[in-house]
Image 1 (cartoon, rainbow, N blue to C red):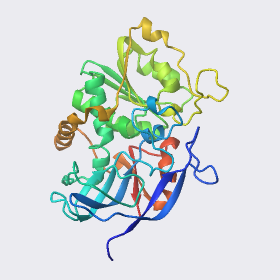
Image 2 (image 1 turned 180 degrees about the horizontal axis):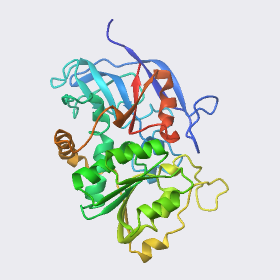
Image 3 (image 1 turned 90 degrees about the horizontal axis):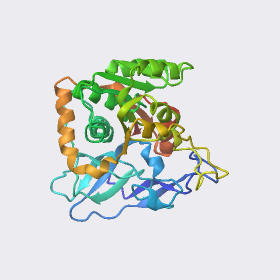
Image 4 (image 1 turned 90 degrees about the vertical axis):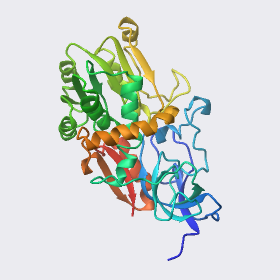
Length: 360
């Protein structure tokens, strides 16, 4: 079989105001086939997507809001849906450092094949005993986010008690391990949905994991945070953030990583708008009275730190401090035509650890 000359792509067709739409006249994306691929130029490579990283942040890239308020350029109508990373195979190369057959991470988007400049791409090195997909998870965005958020943003130490929401997700599950096993925090409390996920979070190192789906959630969280805590790693925002503002010690720190609770909520242009069902923060005075520090961050602002972070995480695995295996990723075998459907599992609580799409 010869090299591909065309590709299929998922293209943004309409920006959703609430949940994405998978089919019909209001579908968020449209599927295009037989899109021509350009001829390779010197320094370029032809890539085939093997796996896709699925990230809640992708939802923010298609918000129907003022682009000036976004931290990254939006995906515009007619654009190929962007990804944080694809794990790809080099099918053809005119780049000396990337021979045919190499595996690389590249921001190729929801496309089968692509031709891109090889500058900045490096072949992924096999790690004995570990799947290459961990470069999209533990050694990719979720691991780097967990490490950066806890150390550089929250200045977390071994003397801190830490609460981590979304603790069964990709970033949250890595944050649990980093907090407990790398930093050595005195207490790590996870928040996750369901008894099974909570049990898994505790197996990763959390001293306790509280089930937000339980009718006793508020009381259970108060019990787990008795005496209050120093740090809250927030992946969800909304009502859980509001509650956690009351469970932090004076001078406590909030690491603001994500607000998935509101990503699919209708966002009016201002308060009081007729169509606006975002969860609000009612305990704002806690920030003042307890002198809390809330700091948001975007990982890509500090790409200079990535090589050091990856080295730290890889060494932690070799030293037995981080536990990695099949259970750290939820890998979904997916036909190209089903990519959006798999991505929406992020918002259904269907994944444990990092959600990955494996194209079949």
